[in-house]
Length: 309
Picture 1 (tube, rainbow, N blue to C red):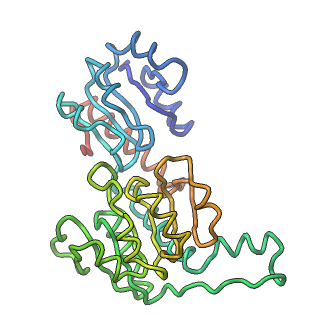
Picture 2 (picture 1 turned 90 degrees about the vertical axis):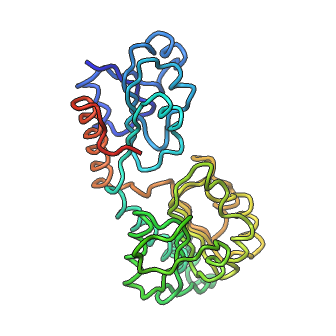
Picture 3 (picture 1 turned 30 degrees about the vertical axis):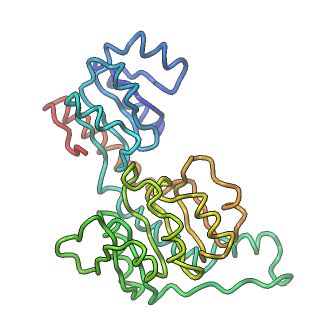
């Protein structure tokens, strides 16, 4: 049996299936330091996720590590450079979650504009007929700005056609053959957009990419949608913009210090907050598990993962 280090739990189905086929050491249980001291030299594979990652400090303790297989598309929590320096491949699970994340992005667009979650609370709390309910904003025909026109960004853009929305996007460079308008200046994209959807990668290159100038350009009628990473947004600047009325609203599936969410965001009726569930459907999570296992098996059989990052 191959000795594997699992950084954090996934589903019971996955955890049990992996443990039945391999020797799996649970990093998240008990004394992690003692586990690495005793078993580090035997560990050949790390199993992790976009949530749990794998820091360089762990990679350094595994002299015989051969591969890192991750559940999820993001890999900013994995020390990829440290792995590459030792020739260790890192795999992720792209594509299989595109549709569900894009679906959720559009759900947040509609919810944030039409105040669906706010209306649900309003009815449940017995306020219907007692106090007035605010008007929402129309979605159809509004301008959609996308930050990061990768696989998920493309899926969001395709969904916009049903709402007759003009689309522009911001990337480090234009996407060849894209039918959507390219905007090299992020502030100008925000100034143009009614909805600004974030589908870019996390990591140092996009840290606090959405800052006060971008939020001010989006403006008091604009809505920010984040299904990317919490690190992409300057969270204190976002809170301030919303509190001061400089930003119209937000739909957020990700946060800077998950699972901690600023209380101010939870208290504002024009903000929708979700517990990082972009890929959280039964179908997609199963597909992600299967792709992780396919990457793992491919490496064990042939020494190469299917989806290297």
